[in-house]
Amino acid sequence: MSKVTQGVFQNIRVYWLAFIVYWGIVLFGYDTGVGGGVVSATYFKEHFGLINADGSVNAQKSDAVSSNVVSVLQAGAFFGAIGSAPLSVRKGSTYVWDTAAIGRKYTLLMFSIIFSVGAILQTISGGSRGIGYIYGGRVVAGVGIGAISAVAPAFVSECCPKEVRGRITGFFQIMVAVGVMISYFINLGISLHIKTGPEVWRIPFGFQLVPAGIMTLGLLTVKESPRWLASKDRTEEALANLAYLRRLPRDDERVRTEMAEIEAAIHEEREARASLGLKEAFFGKGNFIRFVIAVVIFILQQWSGQNSVNYYAPQIFQSIGYTGTSNSLLASGIYGIVKVVATTLFVFFLADTWGRKLSLFVSAIGMGVLFFIIGALLKTFPPPADAATPPPASKAMAAMLYIYVCFYSLGWGPLPWVYVADIFPTRTRHYGLATASASQWLFNFVLSKVTPTMVTDLGYKLFLMFATINIGGMAVFTLLIPETKGRSLEEMDVIFGSVKAEKREADIRKQERAMDHEANETKSERSLEGKGASLSTPKFEAEEEPEIWQRSSSVEIVIKLLDAPETDTVDQI
Picture 1 (tube, rainbow, N blue to C red):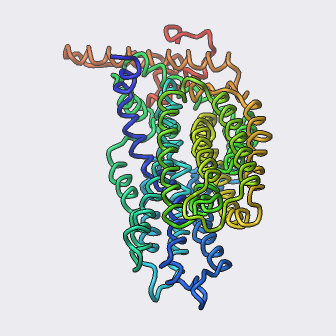
Picture 2: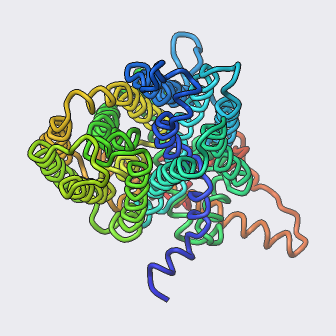
Picture 3: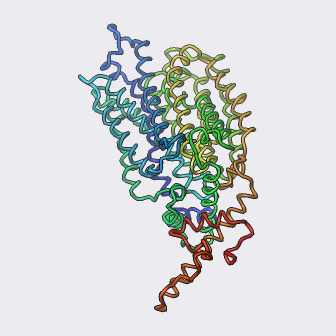
Protein backbone atom coordinates (compact mmCIF):
# COMPACT_ATOMS: atom_id res chain seq x y z
CA MET A 1 0.00 0.00 0.00
CA SER A 2 1.44 3.40 -1.04
CA LYS A 3 2.02 6.24 1.42
CA VAL A 4 -0.71 8.28 -0.28
CA THR A 5 -3.22 5.44 0.10
CA GLN A 6 -2.18 4.89 3.72
CA GLY A 7 -2.63 8.60 4.39
CA VAL A 8 -6.13 8.56 2.89
CA PHE A 9 -7.21 5.61 5.06
CA GLN A 10 -5.56 7.07 8.16
CA ASN A 11 -7.43 10.36 7.66
CA ILE A 12 -10.64 8.90 6.22
CA ARG A 13 -12.75 10.54 8.94
CA VAL A 14 -11.29 13.95 8.11
CA TYR A 15 -11.98 13.37 4.42
CA TRP A 16 -15.57 12.44 5.29
CA LEU A 17 -15.96 15.59 7.40
CA ALA A 18 -14.66 17.74 4.53
CA PHE A 19 -16.93 15.96 2.04
CA ILE A 20 -20.01 16.65 4.19
CA VAL A 21 -19.14 20.22 5.17
CA TYR A 22 -18.23 21.21 1.63
CA TRP A 23 -21.65 20.30 0.23
CA GLY A 24 -22.41 23.77 1.50
CA ILE A 25 -19.69 25.00 -0.82
CA VAL A 26 -21.38 23.25 -3.75
CA LEU A 27 -24.16 25.76 -3.07
CA PHE A 28 -21.55 28.53 -3.32
CA GLY A 29 -20.52 27.35 -6.78
CA TYR A 30 -24.02 26.45 -7.94
CA ASP A 31 -25.49 29.83 -7.11
CA THR A 32 -22.46 31.48 -8.70
CA GLY A 33 -23.28 29.87 -12.05
CA VAL A 34 -27.04 29.40 -12.12
CA GLY A 35 -28.24 33.02 -12.17
CA GLY A 36 -26.80 34.06 -15.54
CA GLY A 37 -28.20 30.99 -17.32
CA VAL A 38 -31.70 31.38 -15.87
CA VAL A 39 -31.93 35.05 -16.85
CA SER A 40 -30.72 34.30 -20.39
CA ALA A 41 -33.70 31.94 -21.02
CA THR A 42 -36.19 33.38 -23.51
CA TYR A 43 -39.29 32.40 -21.51
CA PHE A 44 -37.86 33.99 -18.36
CA LYS A 45 -37.48 37.26 -20.25
CA GLU A 46 -41.00 37.02 -21.65
CA HIS A 47 -42.58 36.17 -18.29
CA PHE A 48 -40.88 38.95 -16.37
CA GLY A 49 -41.39 41.70 -18.97
CA LEU A 50 -37.93 41.94 -20.48
CA ILE A 51 -39.19 41.80 -24.11
CA ASN A 52 -40.22 44.86 -26.13
CA ALA A 53 -43.53 45.07 -27.99
CA ASP A 54 -41.78 44.24 -31.28
CA GLY A 55 -40.39 40.99 -29.82
CA SER A 56 -36.83 42.24 -29.32
CA VAL A 57 -35.04 41.98 -25.98
CA ASN A 58 -35.03 45.16 -23.92
CA ALA A 59 -31.27 45.24 -23.37
CA GLN A 60 -31.41 47.80 -20.57
CA LYS A 61 -34.00 45.89 -18.53
CA SER A 62 -32.38 42.53 -19.27
CA ASP A 63 -28.95 43.72 -18.11
CA ALA A 64 -30.48 45.25 -14.97
CA VAL A 65 -32.37 42.06 -14.02
CA SER A 66 -29.37 39.87 -14.86
CA SER A 67 -27.15 42.04 -12.69
CA ASN A 68 -29.68 42.13 -9.84
CA VAL A 69 -30.35 38.38 -9.77
CA VAL A 70 -26.63 37.75 -9.41
CA SER A 71 -25.69 40.68 -7.18
CA VAL A 72 -28.38 40.45 -4.49
CA LEU A 73 -26.99 37.02 -3.62
CA GLN A 74 -23.59 38.61 -2.97
CA ALA A 75 -25.15 41.36 -0.88
CA GLY A 76 -26.77 38.77 1.37
CA ALA A 77 -23.58 36.72 1.46
CA PHE A 78 -21.56 39.73 2.63
CA PHE A 79 -23.78 40.17 5.67
CA GLY A 80 -23.95 36.41 6.23
CA ALA A 81 -20.16 36.19 6.38
CA ILE A 82 -19.96 39.06 8.87
CA GLY A 83 -22.84 37.70 10.94
CA SER A 84 -21.36 34.21 11.16
CA ALA A 85 -18.59 35.36 13.51
CA PRO A 86 -19.29 34.88 17.24
CA LEU A 87 -20.66 38.02 18.85
CA SER A 88 -18.75 39.96 21.50
CA VAL A 89 -20.48 41.14 24.65
CA ARG A 90 -19.77 44.14 26.83
CA LYS A 91 -18.55 43.57 30.37
CA GLY A 92 -17.60 46.73 32.17
CA SER A 93 -15.29 48.82 30.01
CA THR A 94 -13.96 45.98 27.85
CA TYR A 95 -15.24 43.56 25.27
CA VAL A 96 -14.74 39.85 25.76
CA TRP A 97 -15.62 36.90 23.58
CA ASP A 98 -19.08 35.41 24.04
CA THR A 99 -18.45 31.95 25.51
CA ALA A 100 -21.93 30.80 24.50
CA ALA A 101 -20.88 30.46 20.84
CA ILE A 102 -22.41 27.30 19.44
CA GLY A 103 -19.38 25.95 17.60
CA ARG A 104 -18.57 25.24 13.96
CA LYS A 105 -20.93 22.29 13.46
CA TYR A 106 -24.12 23.86 14.76
CA THR A 107 -23.38 27.20 13.11
CA LEU A 108 -23.31 25.38 9.78
CA LEU A 109 -26.57 23.59 10.59
CA MET A 110 -28.28 26.87 11.42
CA PHE A 111 -27.19 28.65 8.26
CA SER A 112 -27.99 25.67 6.01
CA ILE A 113 -31.60 25.96 7.20
CA ILE A 114 -31.58 29.71 6.51
CA PHE A 115 -30.26 29.01 3.01
CA SER A 116 -33.03 26.47 2.38
CA VAL A 117 -35.67 29.10 3.18
CA GLY A 118 -34.16 31.35 0.52
CA ALA A 119 -34.07 28.52 -2.02
CA ILE A 120 -37.77 27.83 -1.44
CA LEU A 121 -38.66 31.50 -1.98
CA GLN A 122 -36.81 31.50 -5.32
CA THR A 123 -38.48 28.27 -6.41
CA ILE A 124 -42.06 29.47 -5.82
CA SER A 125 -41.53 32.80 -7.61
CA GLY A 126 -43.39 33.81 -10.72
CA GLY A 127 -47.01 34.43 -11.59
CA SER A 128 -48.65 36.97 -9.31
CA ARG A 129 -45.65 36.84 -6.99
CA GLY A 130 -43.40 38.43 -9.59
CA ILE A 131 -39.64 38.68 -9.61
CA GLY A 132 -39.54 40.07 -6.07
CA TYR A 133 -39.59 36.54 -4.64
CA ILE A 134 -36.46 35.73 -6.63
CA TYR A 135 -34.70 38.82 -5.31
CA GLY A 136 -35.82 38.19 -1.73
CA GLY A 137 -34.95 34.50 -1.90
CA ARG A 138 -31.52 35.25 -3.33
CA VAL A 139 -30.80 37.66 -0.45
CA VAL A 140 -31.83 35.08 2.18
CA ALA A 141 -29.92 32.31 0.42
CA GLY A 142 -26.93 34.65 0.19
CA VAL A 143 -26.92 35.11 3.96
CA GLY A 144 -26.69 31.33 4.32
CA ILE A 145 -23.97 30.93 1.68
CA GLY A 146 -21.89 33.79 3.08
CA ALA A 147 -21.89 32.28 6.56
CA ILE A 148 -21.16 28.78 5.27
CA SER A 149 -18.25 30.06 3.18
CA ALA A 150 -16.70 31.59 6.32
CA VAL A 151 -17.32 28.72 8.75
CA ALA A 152 -16.67 25.69 6.53
CA PRO A 153 -12.95 26.24 5.81
CA ALA A 154 -12.29 27.05 9.48
CA PHE A 155 -14.03 23.83 10.57
CA VAL A 156 -12.17 21.65 8.07
CA SER A 157 -8.77 23.29 8.64
CA GLU A 158 -9.03 22.85 12.42
CA CYS A 159 -9.65 19.13 12.00
CA CYS A 160 -6.88 18.41 9.46
CA PRO A 161 -3.37 17.11 10.20
CA LYS A 162 -0.73 19.45 8.80
CA GLU A 163 0.62 16.83 6.34
CA VAL A 164 -2.58 16.86 4.24
CA ARG A 165 -4.19 20.15 5.27
CA GLY A 166 -3.62 21.79 1.89
CA ARG A 167 -5.17 18.85 0.06
CA ILE A 168 -8.22 18.48 2.30
CA THR A 169 -8.88 22.20 2.73
CA GLY A 170 -8.46 22.49 -1.05
CA PHE A 171 -11.60 20.39 -1.47
CA PHE A 172 -13.31 23.76 -1.03
CA GLN A 173 -12.47 24.82 -4.57
CA ILE A 174 -13.27 21.38 -6.02
CA MET A 175 -16.77 21.65 -4.60
CA VAL A 176 -17.11 25.22 -5.88
CA ALA A 177 -16.15 23.96 -9.34
CA VAL A 178 -18.59 21.03 -9.07
CA GLY A 179 -21.39 23.42 -8.14
CA VAL A 180 -20.61 25.74 -11.06
CA MET A 181 -20.46 22.80 -13.49
CA ILE A 182 -23.80 21.40 -12.28
CA SER A 183 -25.44 24.80 -12.72
CA TYR A 184 -24.15 25.10 -16.30
CA PHE A 185 -25.47 21.69 -17.33
CA ILE A 186 -28.84 22.14 -15.62
CA ASN A 187 -29.23 25.41 -17.52
CA LEU A 188 -28.18 23.65 -20.73
CA GLY A 189 -30.70 20.85 -20.15
CA ILE A 190 -33.47 23.36 -19.50
CA SER A 191 -32.62 25.28 -22.69
CA LEU A 192 -32.78 22.09 -24.76
CA HIS A 193 -35.84 20.38 -23.29
CA ILE A 194 -38.04 22.97 -21.53
CA LYS A 195 -38.86 26.03 -23.58
CA THR A 196 -41.84 27.45 -21.69
CA GLY A 197 -43.40 27.38 -18.25
CA PRO A 198 -42.18 28.33 -14.77
CA GLU A 199 -40.05 25.16 -14.69
CA VAL A 200 -37.50 27.21 -16.64
CA TRP A 201 -36.45 28.82 -13.36
CA ARG A 202 -38.10 26.58 -10.77
CA ILE A 203 -36.00 23.51 -11.58
CA PRO A 204 -32.63 25.34 -11.42
CA PHE A 205 -33.58 27.21 -8.24
CA GLY A 206 -35.25 24.18 -6.64
CA PHE A 207 -32.17 22.02 -7.16
CA GLN A 208 -30.40 24.11 -4.51
CA LEU A 209 -32.30 22.14 -1.86
CA VAL A 210 -30.46 18.91 -2.81
CA PRO A 211 -26.92 19.85 -1.67
CA ALA A 212 -28.40 21.81 1.25
CA GLY A 213 -30.24 18.68 2.42
CA ILE A 214 -27.17 16.46 2.02
CA MET A 215 -25.07 18.81 4.14
CA THR A 216 -27.74 19.23 6.82
CA LEU A 217 -28.19 15.48 7.29
CA GLY A 218 -24.48 14.74 6.93
CA LEU A 219 -23.52 17.19 9.67
CA LEU A 220 -25.29 14.94 12.16
CA THR A 221 -22.56 12.33 11.52
CA VAL A 222 -19.44 14.47 12.16
CA LYS A 223 -17.62 15.61 15.30
CA GLU A 224 -17.06 19.16 16.53
CA SER A 225 -13.66 20.79 15.94
CA PRO A 226 -11.11 19.71 18.61
CA ARG A 227 -9.43 23.11 18.48
CA TRP A 228 -12.71 24.93 19.06
CA LEU A 229 -13.55 22.62 21.99
CA ALA A 230 -10.11 23.19 23.51
CA SER A 231 -10.56 26.96 23.21
CA LYS A 232 -13.74 26.60 25.29
CA ASP A 233 -11.95 24.57 28.03
CA ARG A 234 -13.69 21.36 26.96
CA THR A 235 -10.36 19.56 26.99
CA GLU A 236 -11.57 15.99 27.42
CA GLU A 237 -14.01 16.31 24.51
CA ALA A 238 -11.28 17.92 22.41
CA LEU A 239 -8.86 15.06 23.10
CA ALA A 240 -11.55 12.46 22.35
CA ASN A 241 -12.51 14.13 19.05
CA LEU A 242 -8.87 14.56 18.02
CA ALA A 243 -8.18 10.86 18.65
CA TYR A 244 -11.34 9.94 16.73
CA LEU A 245 -10.36 12.03 13.71
CA ARG A 246 -6.80 10.64 13.68
CA ARG A 247 -8.07 7.06 14.19
CA LEU A 248 -5.63 6.62 17.06
CA PRO A 249 -5.97 5.83 20.79
CA ARG A 250 -6.27 8.82 23.10
CA ASP A 251 -2.96 7.96 24.78
CA ASP A 252 -1.07 7.67 21.48
CA GLU A 253 2.04 9.87 21.51
CA ARG A 254 1.09 11.59 18.24
CA VAL A 255 -2.35 12.54 19.55
CA ARG A 256 -0.98 13.78 22.87
CA THR A 257 1.77 15.79 21.16
CA GLU A 258 -0.73 17.48 18.84
CA MET A 259 -3.06 18.15 21.76
CA ALA A 260 -0.17 19.61 23.75
CA GLU A 261 0.61 21.99 20.89
CA ILE A 262 -3.04 23.06 20.68
CA GLU A 263 -3.26 23.66 24.44
CA ALA A 264 0.04 25.58 24.49
CA ALA A 265 -1.14 27.89 21.71
CA ILE A 266 -4.46 28.53 23.45
CA HIS A 267 -2.72 29.25 26.77
CA GLU A 268 -0.39 31.76 25.07
CA GLU A 269 -3.35 33.51 23.43
CA ARG A 270 -5.07 33.84 26.80
CA GLU A 271 -1.93 35.21 28.41
CA ALA A 272 -1.39 37.75 25.67
CA ARG A 273 -5.05 38.73 25.26
CA ALA A 274 -6.69 38.36 28.63
CA SER A 275 -9.05 41.23 27.77
CA LEU A 276 -9.35 40.42 24.09
CA GLY A 277 -11.71 42.74 22.28
CA LEU A 278 -12.24 43.78 18.70
CA LYS A 279 -9.25 46.13 18.75
CA GLU A 280 -6.89 43.43 20.04
CA ALA A 281 -8.36 40.81 17.72
CA PHE A 282 -7.55 42.92 14.67
CA PHE A 283 -4.52 44.89 15.84
CA GLY A 284 -2.91 42.58 18.42
CA LYS A 285 0.69 41.50 17.91
CA GLY A 286 1.01 39.51 14.69
CA ASN A 287 -2.71 39.81 13.88
CA PHE A 288 -3.07 42.92 11.72
CA ILE A 289 -0.82 41.63 8.93
CA ARG A 290 -2.87 38.42 8.80
CA PHE A 291 -6.09 40.37 8.29
CA VAL A 292 -4.42 42.50 5.59
CA ILE A 293 -3.26 39.38 3.74
CA ALA A 294 -6.70 37.74 4.10
CA VAL A 295 -8.52 40.74 2.63
CA VAL A 296 -6.03 41.52 -0.16
CA ILE A 297 -5.74 37.92 -1.34
CA PHE A 298 -9.50 37.74 -1.92
CA ILE A 299 -9.73 41.16 -3.55
CA LEU A 300 -7.07 40.05 -6.02
CA GLN A 301 -8.81 36.69 -6.54
CA GLN A 302 -12.04 38.46 -7.51
CA TRP A 303 -10.25 40.71 -9.99
CA SER A 304 -8.43 37.78 -11.60
CA GLY A 305 -11.36 37.55 -14.03
CA GLN A 306 -12.58 34.13 -12.95
CA ASN A 307 -15.83 35.16 -11.29
CA SER A 308 -16.74 37.44 -14.17
CA VAL A 309 -16.52 34.35 -16.38
CA ASN A 310 -18.37 32.20 -13.82
CA TYR A 311 -21.33 34.54 -13.43
CA TYR A 312 -21.73 35.47 -17.06
CA ALA A 313 -20.18 32.54 -18.92
CA PRO A 314 -22.94 32.41 -21.57
CA GLN A 315 -22.57 36.14 -22.25
CA ILE A 316 -18.75 35.90 -22.24
CA PHE A 317 -18.78 33.08 -24.79
CA GLN A 318 -21.30 34.98 -26.92
CA SER A 319 -18.95 37.98 -26.87
CA ILE A 320 -16.15 35.90 -28.40
CA GLY A 321 -18.36 34.40 -31.13
CA TYR A 322 -20.40 31.54 -29.62
CA THR A 323 -23.78 32.90 -30.69
CA GLY A 324 -27.06 31.28 -29.73
CA THR A 325 -28.12 30.25 -26.25
CA SER A 326 -27.39 26.53 -26.71
CA ASN A 327 -23.90 27.12 -28.15
CA SER A 328 -22.91 29.47 -25.35
CA LEU A 329 -24.36 27.20 -22.64
CA LEU A 330 -22.57 24.15 -24.09
CA ALA A 331 -19.28 26.06 -24.17
CA SER A 332 -19.95 27.10 -20.56
CA GLY A 333 -20.61 23.48 -19.57
CA ILE A 334 -17.30 22.33 -21.07
CA TYR A 335 -15.61 25.18 -19.20
CA GLY A 336 -17.14 23.82 -15.98
CA ILE A 337 -15.87 20.28 -16.66
CA VAL A 338 -12.34 21.52 -17.34
CA LYS A 339 -12.40 23.49 -14.10
CA VAL A 340 -13.48 20.49 -12.01
CA VAL A 341 -10.85 18.18 -13.52
CA ALA A 342 -8.02 20.73 -13.22
CA THR A 343 -8.90 21.63 -9.63
CA THR A 344 -9.14 17.98 -8.59
CA LEU A 345 -5.76 17.10 -10.09
CA PHE A 346 -4.09 20.06 -8.40
CA VAL A 347 -5.63 19.49 -4.97
CA PHE A 348 -4.80 15.78 -4.90
CA PHE A 349 -1.33 15.82 -6.42
CA LEU A 350 0.24 19.29 -6.15
CA ALA A 351 -1.32 21.30 -3.29
CA ASP A 352 0.96 19.78 -0.63
CA THR A 353 3.91 19.28 -3.02
CA TRP A 354 4.50 22.64 -4.68
CA GLY A 355 3.63 24.76 -1.69
CA ARG A 356 1.40 27.82 -1.55
CA LYS A 357 3.71 30.52 -2.94
CA LEU A 358 4.98 28.70 -6.03
CA SER A 359 1.48 27.57 -6.97
CA LEU A 360 0.04 31.07 -6.61
CA PHE A 361 2.89 32.64 -8.61
CA VAL A 362 2.72 30.19 -11.54
CA SER A 363 -1.07 30.48 -11.54
CA ALA A 364 -1.02 34.30 -11.76
CA ILE A 365 1.57 34.42 -14.54
CA GLY A 366 -0.25 31.77 -16.58
CA MET A 367 -3.63 33.52 -16.27
CA GLY A 368 -2.15 36.88 -17.20
CA VAL A 369 -0.43 35.58 -20.35
CA LEU A 370 -3.60 33.81 -21.53
CA PHE A 371 -5.77 36.87 -21.00
CA PHE A 372 -3.30 38.94 -23.05
CA ILE A 373 -3.61 36.35 -25.86
CA ILE A 374 -7.43 36.39 -25.71
CA GLY A 375 -7.51 40.20 -25.76
CA ALA A 376 -5.15 40.32 -28.75
CA LEU A 377 -7.19 37.73 -30.68
CA LEU A 378 -10.47 39.51 -29.95
CA LYS A 379 -9.00 42.82 -31.13
CA THR A 380 -7.47 41.32 -34.27
CA PHE A 381 -10.29 38.93 -35.21
CA PRO A 382 -13.60 40.34 -33.91
CA PRO A 383 -16.33 37.67 -34.25
CA PRO A 384 -19.09 38.19 -36.85
CA ALA A 385 -22.49 39.03 -35.40
CA ASP A 386 -24.57 36.22 -36.93
CA ALA A 387 -22.20 33.33 -37.68
CA ALA A 388 -23.96 29.94 -37.68
CA THR A 389 -20.86 28.26 -36.28
CA PRO A 390 -18.03 29.80 -34.24
CA PRO A 391 -15.15 30.97 -36.47
CA PRO A 392 -11.59 29.64 -35.93
CA ALA A 393 -10.56 32.70 -33.90
CA SER A 394 -13.51 32.17 -31.53
CA LYS A 395 -12.55 28.53 -31.07
CA ALA A 396 -8.99 29.61 -30.29
CA MET A 397 -10.25 32.10 -27.69
CA ALA A 398 -12.47 29.43 -26.13
CA ALA A 399 -9.45 27.13 -25.94
CA MET A 400 -7.49 29.90 -24.23
CA LEU A 401 -10.31 30.28 -21.68
CA TYR A 402 -10.18 26.54 -20.98
CA ILE A 403 -6.40 26.68 -20.46
CA TYR A 404 -6.88 29.81 -18.37
CA VAL A 405 -9.19 27.99 -15.95
CA CYS A 406 -6.54 25.27 -15.59
CA PHE A 407 -4.04 27.88 -14.39
CA TYR A 408 -6.69 29.37 -12.11
CA SER A 409 -7.29 25.93 -10.60
CA LEU A 410 -3.54 25.54 -10.11
CA GLY A 411 -3.38 28.27 -7.50
CA TRP A 412 -5.69 31.25 -7.23
CA GLY A 413 -8.81 29.08 -7.21
CA PRO A 414 -8.27 26.79 -4.21
CA LEU A 415 -5.32 28.33 -2.38
CA PRO A 416 -6.70 31.64 -1.05
CA TRP A 417 -9.16 29.64 1.07
CA VAL A 418 -6.43 27.22 2.14
CA TYR A 419 -3.98 30.03 2.94
CA VAL A 420 -6.43 32.13 4.96
CA ALA A 421 -7.61 29.07 6.91
CA ASP A 422 -3.92 28.35 7.64
CA ILE A 423 -2.75 31.63 9.08
CA PHE A 424 -5.12 32.56 11.92
CA PRO A 425 -4.92 31.30 15.54
CA THR A 426 -7.87 29.33 16.89
CA ARG A 427 -9.52 32.14 18.84
CA THR A 428 -9.47 34.59 15.94
CA ARG A 429 -9.64 32.17 13.00
CA HIS A 430 -13.35 32.58 12.57
CA TYR A 431 -13.06 36.37 12.68
CA GLY A 432 -10.30 36.20 10.09
CA LEU A 433 -12.28 33.95 7.79
CA ALA A 434 -15.44 36.00 8.29
CA THR A 435 -13.55 39.17 7.32
CA ALA A 436 -11.90 37.47 4.35
CA SER A 437 -15.17 35.93 3.19
CA ALA A 438 -16.99 39.24 3.57
CA SER A 439 -14.37 41.01 1.43
CA GLN A 440 -14.67 38.23 -1.14
CA TRP A 441 -18.45 38.61 -1.32
CA LEU A 442 -18.24 42.41 -1.35
CA PHE A 443 -16.07 42.39 -4.47
CA ASN A 444 -18.18 39.57 -5.89
CA PHE A 445 -21.08 42.01 -5.60
CA VAL A 446 -19.11 44.80 -7.28
CA LEU A 447 -18.04 42.57 -10.17
CA SER A 448 -21.52 41.12 -10.66
CA LYS A 449 -22.85 44.67 -11.06
CA VAL A 450 -20.18 45.92 -13.44
CA THR A 451 -19.37 42.83 -15.53
CA PRO A 452 -22.37 43.02 -17.94
CA THR A 453 -21.50 46.64 -18.69
CA MET A 454 -17.77 45.88 -19.02
CA VAL A 455 -18.45 43.00 -21.44
CA THR A 456 -20.58 45.32 -23.60
CA ASP A 457 -18.47 48.49 -23.40
CA LEU A 458 -14.87 47.30 -23.05
CA GLY A 459 -14.79 44.32 -25.39
CA TYR A 460 -11.20 43.10 -25.80
CA LYS A 461 -9.95 45.67 -23.25
CA LEU A 462 -11.70 43.70 -20.49
CA PHE A 463 -9.30 40.79 -21.01
CA LEU A 464 -6.27 43.10 -21.15
CA MET A 465 -7.36 44.66 -17.85
CA PHE A 466 -7.59 41.25 -16.16
CA ALA A 467 -4.21 40.27 -17.63
CA THR A 468 -2.55 43.32 -16.12
CA ILE A 469 -4.06 42.64 -12.69
CA ASN A 470 -2.89 39.02 -12.78
CA ILE A 471 0.72 39.76 -13.62
CA GLY A 472 1.22 43.20 -12.07
CA GLY A 473 -0.78 42.63 -8.89
CA MET A 474 -1.28 38.98 -8.03
CA ALA A 475 2.14 37.65 -9.03
CA VAL A 476 3.92 40.41 -7.11
CA PHE A 477 1.72 39.93 -4.02
CA THR A 478 2.59 36.22 -3.99
CA LEU A 479 6.29 37.02 -3.56
CA LEU A 480 5.60 39.02 -0.38
CA ILE A 481 3.67 36.48 1.73
CA PRO A 482 5.23 33.70 3.87
CA GLU A 483 5.04 30.01 2.96
CA THR A 484 2.70 27.88 5.13
CA LYS A 485 3.09 24.47 3.52
CA GLY A 486 3.83 21.69 6.04
CA ARG A 487 3.45 23.98 9.06
CA SER A 488 0.93 23.30 11.82
CA LEU A 489 -1.76 25.86 12.59
CA GLU A 490 -0.09 26.56 15.92
CA GLU A 491 3.22 27.39 14.17
CA MET A 492 1.57 30.35 12.41
CA ASP A 493 1.92 32.44 15.59
CA VAL A 494 5.69 31.98 15.32
CA ILE A 495 5.72 32.78 11.58
CA PHE A 496 3.77 36.02 12.07
CA GLY A 497 5.59 37.09 15.23
CA SER A 498 2.81 36.68 17.80
CA VAL A 499 5.09 34.49 19.92
CA LYS A 500 8.78 33.58 19.85
CA ALA A 501 9.78 30.07 18.83
CA GLU A 502 11.65 29.50 22.11
CA LYS A 503 8.59 30.33 24.22
CA ARG A 504 6.36 28.08 22.10
CA GLU A 505 8.76 25.14 22.53
CA ALA A 506 8.92 25.70 26.29
CA ASP A 507 5.13 25.84 26.57
CA ILE A 508 4.76 22.64 24.57
CA ARG A 509 7.23 20.85 26.84
CA LYS A 510 5.30 22.00 29.91
CA GLN A 511 2.03 20.91 28.36
CA GLU A 512 3.46 17.48 27.54
CA ARG A 513 4.69 17.09 31.12
CA ALA A 514 1.25 18.01 32.41
CA MET A 515 -0.43 15.48 30.14
CA ASP A 516 2.07 12.76 31.10
CA HIS A 517 1.42 13.49 34.76
CA GLU A 518 -2.33 13.16 34.18
CA ALA A 519 -1.88 9.90 32.29
CA ASN A 520 0.40 8.38 34.97
CA GLU A 521 -1.93 9.42 37.75
CA THR A 522 -4.92 7.92 35.95
CA LYS A 523 -3.08 4.61 35.50
CA SER A 524 -2.11 4.61 39.18
CA GLU A 525 -5.69 5.23 40.27
CA ARG A 526 -6.99 2.45 38.05
CA SER A 527 -4.36 0.06 39.41
CA LEU A 528 -5.37 0.80 42.99
CA GLU A 529 -9.04 0.42 42.17
CA GLY A 530 -8.32 -2.93 40.51
CA LYS A 531 -6.72 -4.20 43.71
CA GLY A 532 -9.72 -3.09 45.74
CA ALA A 533 -7.69 -0.44 47.51
CA SER A 534 -9.28 2.78 48.58
CA LEU A 535 -7.74 5.83 47.00
CA SER A 536 -6.58 8.43 49.49
CA THR A 537 -4.93 11.76 49.01
CA PRO A 538 -1.57 12.34 50.76
CA LYS A 539 -1.91 14.26 54.03
CA PHE A 540 -0.25 17.65 54.29
CA GLU A 541 -0.36 20.47 56.71
CA ALA A 542 -2.55 23.30 55.46
CA GLU A 543 0.42 25.61 55.01
CA GLU A 544 2.50 22.91 53.28
CA GLU A 545 -0.15 21.36 51.03
CA PRO A 546 1.17 21.50 47.44
CA GLU A 547 -1.04 23.55 45.16
CA ILE A 548 -1.03 20.76 42.58
CA TRP A 549 -3.41 18.70 44.73
CA GLN A 550 -5.89 21.54 45.09
CA ARG A 551 -7.53 21.03 41.71
CA SER A 552 -11.05 20.41 40.59
CA SER A 553 -10.33 19.60 36.95
CA SER A 554 -7.57 18.62 34.57
CA VAL A 555 -7.65 22.12 33.06
CA GLU A 556 -6.47 23.74 36.32
CA ILE A 557 -3.47 21.42 36.73
CA VAL A 558 -2.50 22.23 33.11
CA ILE A 559 -2.59 25.96 33.80
CA LYS A 560 -0.61 25.58 37.05
CA LEU A 561 2.09 23.57 35.32
CA LEU A 562 2.23 25.98 32.39
CA ASP A 563 2.68 28.87 34.80
CA ALA A 564 5.45 27.06 36.71
CA PRO A 565 9.11 28.00 35.95
CA GLU A 566 10.55 26.05 33.05
CA THR A 567 13.11 24.34 35.31
CA ASP A 568 10.37 22.77 37.44
CA THR A 569 9.58 19.14 36.89
CA VAL A 570 6.56 17.12 37.82
CA ASP A 571 8.62 15.28 40.45
CA GLN A 572 9.75 18.56 42.03
CA ILE A 573 6.17 19.78 42.18
